[in-house]
Image 1 (cartoon, rainbow, N blue to C red):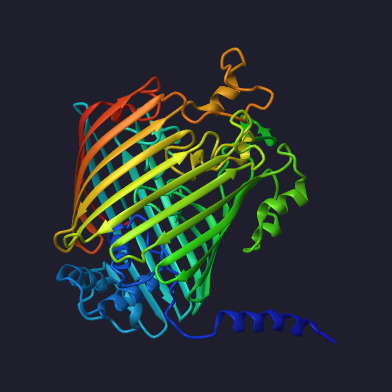
Image 2: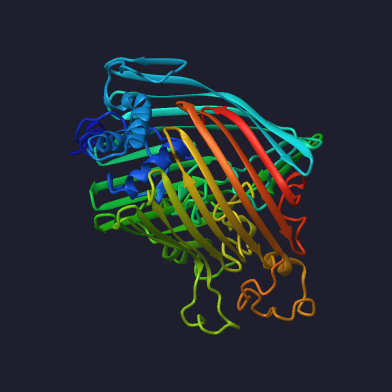
Length: 550
């Protein structure tokens, strides 16, 4: 007979057996996706064949980065620049290799370690000044971060950054590869704060966590097209497991912000109305296999679901969520939710060459695929390549992105691919494309120069048309099935060209000086629509700044 004490003891034994199979320092404390310096170094090491890593999902954990740097440091034939880069970052990431206070450690405002507890505390501070059209605006921020471990498996991290922009430089209606924000507006200026943090539990083949953070899924050096990381951070649980070197599962379940008022749940009080926002969630998984060294093939699926409570079926990491939705809600769009699929391939089998592609599928119909009047293939495709070290430190990148009409969209406002009204996918959103060319040069440790050219185009906003238009206004749209047969960019309504020179110098760990100078040319019927007024000028623009911390 099972007593109450025995029933409690069974899950305790299960957790002990699953989560404590071996010992290691907690690996789950993530490194911000904004910390581009260390991520670029890992990419270069992978391109050179020094390390073999799967780069489709970020952020990485501190222990993972530390182990890859240790692995690379044992490689005999590295250029002196790379050796200096590794030694520079190991001043920070050697903390993950020992419980003792490391020698030659980076500067931290506070650092403590003993056999059980490890804690790092640092400030976050920065100022960026932008020039455009003869005007100037600035963005300043300040705050702090901490992270650490308790024992061998538990990790924690937190940060808070207060921001002020003299002119509002972003927003959900703009086409910008920039982290979104929830502004407290004051005339033309804006303030916002960003709190991130989480707790993690790690074991020797996986990590589980509860976070409020930013994350990216997909391949690309100029943004990604599954999860771009451009939305304001939101809460999510994550699971990443790799029980064998050739297999990995990534899973997340997030609590999104719909910004759609639930009029039924809202209520009045003595001098106003309490507005309740509709519930909105996302669940996604991604399975990656490595059939050959340097070759990674990924497939996954997701669902945005809303107007209900958390569904336990969407907490199962290996589920096909569209089929689950059919079970609960039938095949009706009016009742059901919004499901997606995605695929990725990355090849670094040729030394110093990285070829990659990511496909995001919102809807596809095999039966109607070749009938232009009926097809509804709502997809986003990104493909590109990078050739590194033709001369030491130089890399050339080419990327093309194509977003079909209605991808990332949905006719039900609570189930769009958005949080806080910011698109979670590619920053150009639907009915658009982009060509990106880049020549990057890293001559010495910590210095980065990049010359890039960007051509972005945007067609009609069909979602906006369908909300307000009629068949007489837009004869190319079949109003009986208005989301079928929409032509891809039959009219270019916004074209954006930018040639840009950027540079940065990481003087100390996480401490940067940087600048950029660009020439912009914006044209089209929607010329005034997709950028803030301050950044919507043709001609030269630029910025420079300093920051410490992320």
